[in-house]
Length: 97
Image 1 (cartoon, rainbow, N blue to C red):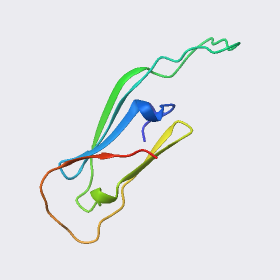
Image 2 (cartoon, rainbow, N blue to C red):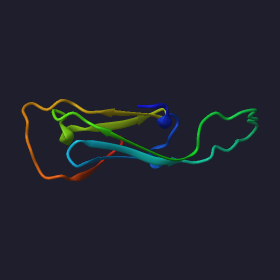
Image 3 (cartoon, rainbow, N blue to C red):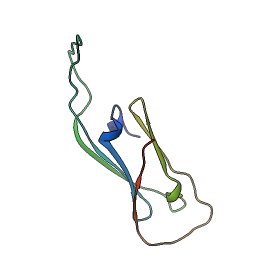
């Protein structure tokens, strides 16, 4: 994933598959607040809304797409499909584990 996803929380990001081979990652990163005795001189993470769309290859198994979020890093796994299958365009939300 590109660095726009670094440091996001599960509730700040959504992963969708649409039209058969489009993967969309979107969300909104909230402003980081100083906590306790923390003193920041500079904050280098961006905040605000983000959205990225990726066209996946025709042999991607869109029904088997998985995503996970660990230590603020989003990982999306798209396995290859065996054989080509056509179908209706759909939008399906991907749960983040």
